Length: 69
Image 1 (cartoon, one colour):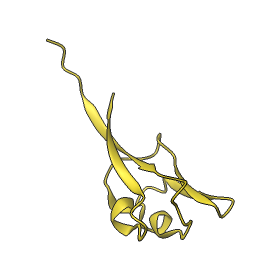
Image 2 (spheres, helix red, strand yellow):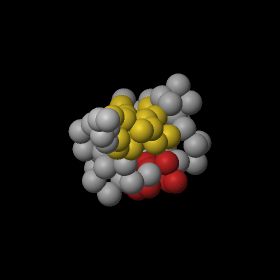
Image 3 (cartoon, one colour):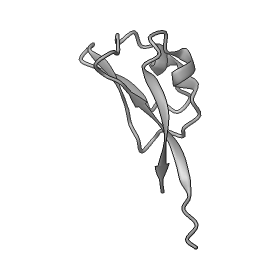
């Protein structure tokens, strides 16, 4: 049986994002940026899946998803 490892990554529902920047300030690895003042975007290569951004988001539009490695 194959051992499939998974890792959590943050994802932003950009249609509901209010671009407040709370997630940017809360991210300990600098994996999030606000694009053109419209929505936040997560750099999946930098994201460590800690979930701090989701906890900081006042609009609750950031979710952690399991992704296969």
